[in-house]
Image (cartoon, rainbow, N blue to C red; front, top):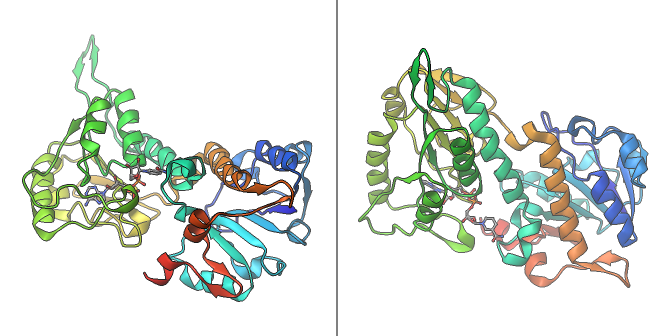
Length: 374
Ligand code: NAD
């Protein structure tokens, strides 16, 4: 069983899908691991470290030759692979809804493509969940990005020259990223409030010492669909939410938005008119900018200014913390493959629940229900 780890070719992608730690563990399972030279450089991992962990390090063609499993952070273009054996696995974050043509190409190439972001949200799969591990880091980094764009301080400071007041931070969307953003902003000394459509998050917000801002008395307030994900909200709810946000946002210095709905474009939470009510010098970070954006006027890959307010739209935020993001991503992949490792066969064997959820292609066809019904 040969596992190949390839260098990421997507622009701006600095992460890598295996670390020396996980290479060692794969070898302990009985696999051989080959790593493309330079794969870890941008995540601060030298080729020599992979070699010391027991991997063979070579050019891309050598790394890919005869591989049974290819590990990657993002989905590679089929023609950047080496004509893998029929049925070889490709395990990565494959952005299935956004990269449908590429999924078709994996099918045509006879690959079995496994999309790690389709991992079901069940307790036993928590340690395999790349969305959680990467969102957590995004939430943290979003606050640091906001702090570095903001030309005031976060904590209240009482100095001999007088007092400066604490920054007011508002987090919209309290999933994994939002919770970490609340915690990070609190650690920096900000006054934090937060909102979500899922009423279950109220308690979580309070437990982190932040103030929940919630739409009350509107039908469908639960806001929770399958797997703990949000559902799209009614028009009545959206109107009430917009009013609530309008009155709250004008008093905020920093807003971090993280709201996503799987398989759809991100909900629009902040309009240009609302931005105009904010104090000049305020900062908004839109973590959903690549999924269509929560904030009107946000531009993916740029920091833009509207009405004196900076709107930060960095792409691929986890990659901005490439070393830690790679370490967690790599462990997610190892936890996944090792959980299904069949010792006799010396290869992983997926069960139905997880296999059906994450398998996109098999035997030349696209087989994933969620993708086919989207
Ligand atoms: P997500 O990235 O899909 O969305 C981010 C947040 O935005 C969510 O909290 C969502 O409710 C919120 N949102 C959506 N539309 C909104 C709107 N119009 N206004 C305000 N907020 C809006 O979510 P996530 O971070 O992946 O987490 C969602 C839930 O799933 C959490 O409770 C998390 O703990 C849970 N989860 C469970 C597992 C597991 O059990 N394996 C793994 C990951 C996450």
